[in-house]
Amino acid sequence: MDQSVPLVQFVNRPGVIDLAWGHPDPDLLPVEGLRNASARVFERYGADALNYGYAAGPGPLIDWLCGRLSDVDGRAATPDQVVISAGTSQALDQVTTLFTKPGDVVLVESPTYHLAVRILRDHPLELVPIAADEDGVRVDALHG
Image (tube, rainbow, N blue to C red; front, side, top):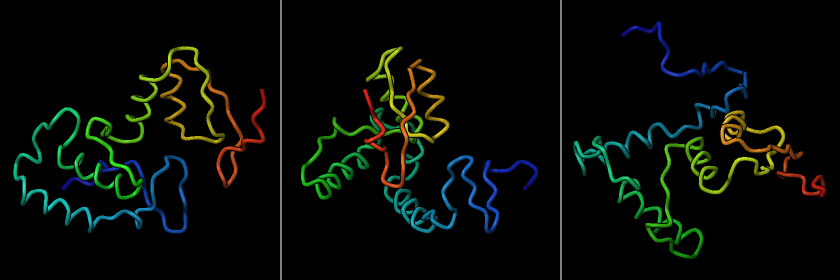
């Protein structure tokens, strides 16, 4: 196997917390749990697990999420209330596309996720940085 082309853009260096790209600590990633879950999916669904799926997302995942939301929130979601995304960036783009129009003002924590800034500017929105601390956005810093 050729090791000259890396698999990921992140290089884990002991003792260094790299905040440049927002990558999680590799030690916190549930590799074994995902390995076991993948095995169960392939045992149950076989090749269908790798095929193009339902446009709204995998039905069994949506059903599970509806049940989980009911357990956690105390109210059940219906499948049409659940949106599956490929990740944070896609979800942010979807929400921005659906709920904003060019020129709208968007408040963003400062500092904030660099790709969020790029996505929001692509729409194009007016970004207003808002100070944040360990508790989140500093509401006292907001003024009319």
